Image (cartoon, rainbow, N blue to C red; front, side, top):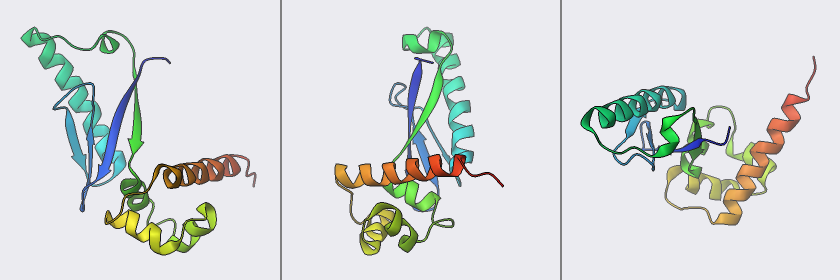
Length: 135
């Protein structure tokens, strides 16, 4: 589907928040990414419905079928998976120092683009490997 709408997901200390850059003011929160995904879908529907009722313009992408695509920041991604991957395991997957990963997860430091790509590539490679598993 070519009609992809970006949803940015962030970790905000205790929960996750989401926003849709194409729809200013369209935001949602949740205690998990799954919960925030559900809430942002509802927020998008309500935002579009309200805009149409008020006679406001909406981006053309929302006139037909569209898909919400979720983009995490590094802090959000690392916090989402903190119960699944230790910093040591992520170090092995990414080559990024465990202490540096802790800084990224806490939000005290922001990763450079090269580090973001290492994280993204490691998660994608792991996903490809897991898809191939047969039991």
